[in-house]
Image (tube, rainbow, N blue to C red):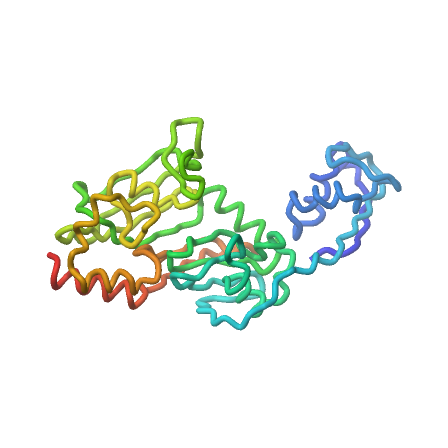
Length: 320
């Protein structure tokens, strides 16, 4: 991590914008963070505090000050973590269903972030004060794999991979209804539901962000389907919204459940097994990406939670 530093602009670097120059010289800091430091007056050029867009001249002296991270108003909590991989740059964890990823309205304690701060105290300041280390998230009711950045360099590189759609993310889901096709692609725009601000919805072109989900059917039951969903984009609630839009909402998902699926749950044992999920039947089973420092391709898999497995086992014996 860069602390206070000084740089001389070479002839080859003359003409570069200040923020681009610093991005080259300080690869451990993201460009957005460097721009924030410039805006905060932490960067000087020849004793002056310029804008990020200022073109540089050969021989100019650039001084950079990186203040210590703002202390978090969060207290680390000894919440158990299921860590499947860890090194100096990142860790990969399996989040249980029911655990909120980061603090928000109604969730000021007991989140994955609180657990991460206990496990890795140096996460402070990486990726934002409220979401230290968080590169991507899973909904509270979803279980499965998450990668967490331990350095700004790792956060920047992993975020870039997500933006470039080069991260492999495969989910296992159980949905209401029997899909008519063995595989397919759902490609729509997703945005905030104008009638329900806590929900997302498929929106007309120009009123949401592009979202692409591929799916493959794995097993069919009398009123349910087990499938694999593969994300090409990572919009909020994407899989849940897309499958509900097709008319096949994820089992246990009360937010996007349609009224017509209620008849599928007359079986009291089935209702009990769904309650035991502590969320809904959606699991991030596979996560693959390129290591942000070594460049080595990494892929991780997480087995289904026991409650999800019990639900599938019951469907195989009683709901064919």
